[in-house]
Length: 176
Image (cartoon, rainbow, N blue to C red; front, side, top):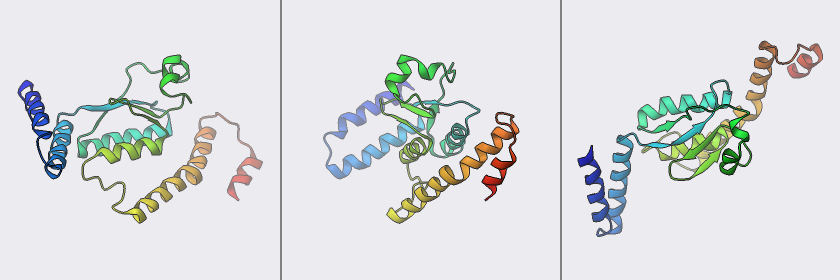
């Protein structure tokens, strides 16, 4: 492993002596090598119960295996406690999860934004579309899922868990 690390440093020294075209090619090689070492992109704050977090966890496992991307989970995160602490709020002022604290210092929260960012780091990713029209269609369906479908899933989930009592007027309203 140490020899591999020296190899990366040698490539960095050569990087600055090359032409722009060759630098781009070498940069891609370095990115692929770093991904092959399974370096973490950062820490993903979520809970196993959170539906949005489940979407990212699926994305993390399914897409991560294909692209070689790795995202860590915090060891002892307790929601509604840790996300209200000053050190968490200093990173994420809204205190919301899911949130990604990137290894490079970049921070982003909200499911769609985190998923888009991670997908953009994957070499040869097809998850974002290959042109503006495809990207717009992908964003459209993500928005439909977030605004039109998720609210009903959450309602049914809360009813089944007994978090809210059954109410025939509420049921009738949502069936319209």
